[in-house]
Length: 192
Image (cartoon, rainbow, N blue to C red; front, side, top):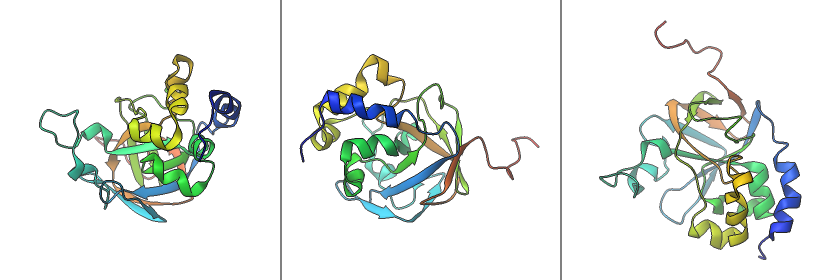
């Protein structure tokens, strides 16, 4: 499939930036059981220890930790559903992004700074500081121009490539779940 040009990406950005600031929607859940494999789920379980249950985050490890263990602040990767729709052009190609949660929500740093909690179904995740950048595999699947576009200084803070998060409250997530900022209404603040 032909990759989009910078002009194509610029013209499609208007729709992406109209993503909801709050009360978004979980559009896709993708589990990566082993490198190179993707399983699209209707329902998933987010766990404090392993992230998305059945995903290889914990066993895959990270080159960004001293001992090669899984990076605790990169437990769950989230991408903007409108951005991946623009890049992939076919929903069947969305899982190629390598992310786990595809959400129709503004993921920009102004809307979701590190430390922001997102309630998804009965789970809560927290946005973490490490950047989520495009890699060689992403560039091969969606084009070098896409990675360049998302890395432009004026676009970088919009987190067009996505964000990293960690699970802070385990629970079940389902396609179509509302995604909102802040903890669940029935959650008690710490210390009460």
